[in-house]
Image (cartoon, rainbow, N blue to C red):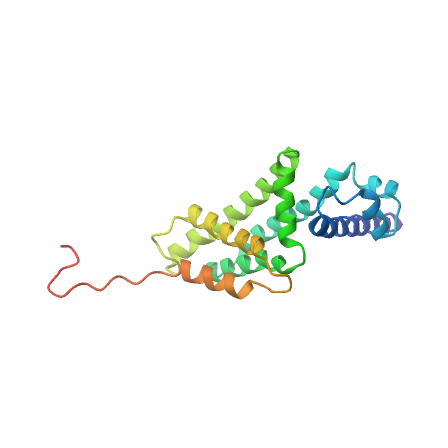
Length: 207
């Protein structure tokens, strides 16, 4: 039992360090945030930080490792969802919620800056995006079969478009303003089956 408690405490401390680092990286930038600064914020030594993370780059990636875990959880929920259409709206809203957090747009900018220097980060972000894209595409395909989603949409392309909309919420983030309502409305309008255009009088649909 003691070993289990120790492991849980270590897990919680690692998460605390990672969350603190993510906040500082997002608001101050990667280059302007030292491991010593992160350690002071957490109330530990720099050596303790390196006990949990091998280097500063690994510490930056930790936030995206958490994103990967969230993506895997979302994918599992998507597989169990009874209502494909509702599940898509929930996923889009959930993924966009963090855009309201201070520094959300800053973290996006730091990813771009770090991409050319950290192939592990690029692979991690790509893996997360692929899992979410597959989960969304699967739900979209189901919705098309069930008649709740426009049958003219391509599931894979539509999933990618929804991800681009979510990314846009981060790039245009306003701290404290949750974009959930706008994301749901945008996704709903795009996914709903489109009405057939009226047929002009005297014309047949087959003409």
